[in-house]
Structure formats: C-alpha cells, structure tokens
Amino acid sequence: MLLHIIARGKIGRSPEGELVERYAKRLTWPVKLTEWPDTGAGKVAEPLTPHRTVLLDERGKAMSSEDFAALLGRWRDDGVRETRFMIGAADGHSDAERASADLLLAFGPATWPHMLARAMLMEQLYRATTILAGHPYHRA
Image (tube, rainbow, N blue to C red; front, side, top):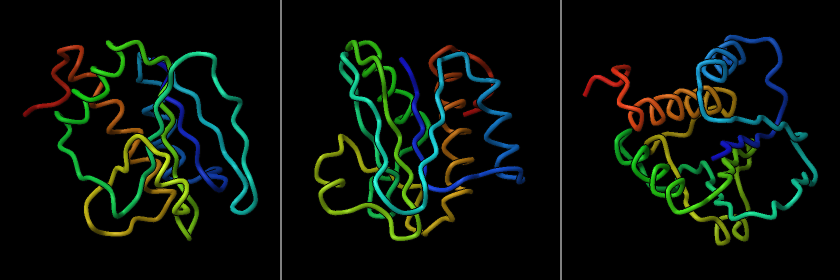
C-alpha cells in the first residue's frame, strides 16, 4: 500500500526535514511526499484503485501505535492501494475536508507545528510498518 503524505508548506532543509528523510529511507512500504503551497488549492490525481484519506487534526482520534498499525494492516489486507495523509497549514482543514475523510487522526490534544507533525507522522508510519513486520523497533 502506498503511504502518500500530502502537506502544506515546504519543509526544505531543516531538522524536521532531516527526520522526514530519515524515516522515508527506512520505510519498506512505498512512500510518496507531496508538498502544496500554504494557501490555494492543491491537486492530487484520483487513483483508479481504492484509497483512504486521513487528515491530521487536533480534533481527531488519538490512537496507540499498535492500533494505528492494525488499522493500516486492515486497510492493506482489504485491498486499499493508497492511504493519503493530509497535513494542513496553520488554519487546518475545512469542515468539508473533515467530513469527507476516512479518519481524523490526532497526536494528542495539543496543536503541533505542521512541520513537526510531518516528522512525527513519518516516524509513526515507520513504527506501524515495523510492528506489522514483527520487527523489534517497537518495544511495547
């Protein structure tokens, strides 16, 4: 399953960008990173295969790493070919975007800077895939 991270803003050369690159290199699942401008419309070609959309949102559901891994594993096993993880800009997501998402995901009740949220998401994706593979990275 393709893990597609779509984020507002350019991460560039930064400590957060280095973390994103580090985890992207470690992932054994295919991963795609798409950056949109901070404002205006972004466009992703609709896939011909089933996909899921996950919005990172402070009002979303907080999940343990094990539950997140199990969800990704179920979607993969159900034939989902792509999961899109959307990270908004400073103003977050619109009500329409929230309503159409398959999952609103929160990294706790705090508001996180979107560049840091991108690095946190990449680490959680790496962690989830290692949990599914039985790799010892996750020590729970």
